[in-house]
Length: 63
Image 1: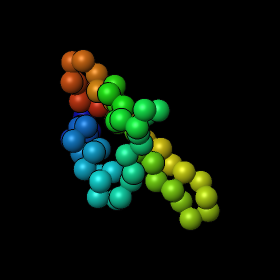
Image 2: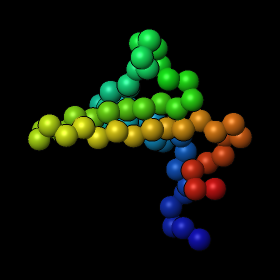
Image 3: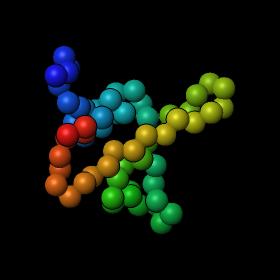
Image 4: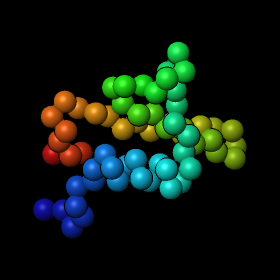
């Protein structure tokens, strides 16, 4: 058993917003519907990306 609770999509979203990641838009300029993608540019020019998936059954991560 883990000492930490299972993360949730809300925790992931809150982290991205708190750390000032930018929400990536789809080709037509609208948010992507099947997942949220965030980017964080680094000082050396690299870009980190993370996705928050939205499965149909809304299970927690790692379940």
